Amino acid sequence: MLQFEWPWLFLLLPLPWLLRRFLPPASAAEGAALRVPALHDFEVLMSGGGSAQVKRASMLLAALAWVLLVSGAARPEWLGEPVELPVNGRDLMLAVDLSESMHESDFVLNNQPVDRLTACKAVAREFISRRVGDRLGLILFGQQAYLQVPLTFDRQTVQQLLDEAVIGIAGRQTAIGDALGLGVKRLREQNTPHKVMILMTDGRNTVGDVDPLRAAELAAEAGLTVHTIGIGADEAVQRGFFGTIRINPSNDLDEDTLRAIAKKTGGRYFRARDAQAFEKIYQEIDKLEPVEHSGSHFRPTTALFYWPLGAALLVYLGLLAWVPRQSMAERA
Image (cartoon, rainbow, N blue to C red):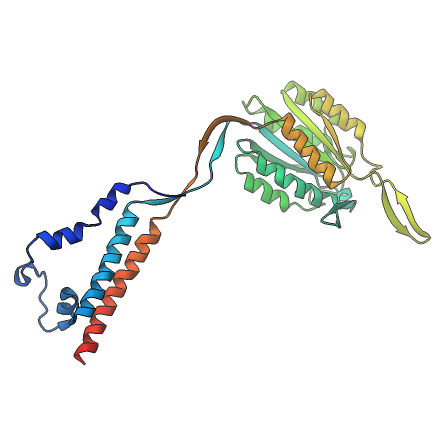
């Protein structure tokens, strides 16, 4: 919706007409700041042209420039859609596995097979966009765990850096305990009463300095809730020399440890066997960790004053260029 911050300035629109109507005409000899008797173009511009048509056109252009100038001074703004303000957001850390096994293409998106990380990114995108008012962070882990994004309200940056994540960039193995320990370290420093971590992996802890269950105990002591997600299908068809065989691509998934981590911290363990299950998991987490709202709203505004001001400048420059050219054409 378009609105003007200072609409009372539109009362100035008839000002040029009132001045022209009620004030006596200025004397050319007294009012001229600069006399250029040899340049006829200055007289033409001041008088509005040599003919009635040129004068009328110049007056219309001048009136248009004045309307645009007043419109810009009234500060037009575009009001966006109402946004509900959260009453109390959470500190929510996402921990995403980038180990070599995430290359397994046992998920389907848009009728196309995709690897596990691609499915994770696609589903997490909607989840991140819904967490208005939460501070989000991102941990990427493989053989090592890295804090890719510290806690921030900038959901777009979190999504962008997750989209740019590449399998194997943190190593080929899986350090679940180190990732959980890093999340505990970062969240424990915050004073927010609601601290949540979502840990997504398709394997088991094979490397690292911190035992996952010990890290879960530290998380519980810090008041951190950890929801764990096991990624991977139960069955996949693999082509071999003697035909196709059915295999379990999630043999390495340590569901017992993931369940234990969630239980120790008051969270829940989820199993993502396909993209649809993944989406339902995030919807369930939205219910478990709802975004609380205060009931108040604000509407984002975008300033538009530079458009009418720019148009007024163009009209004025066009007036300066057009009137002398018309007068010279008439003299010719």
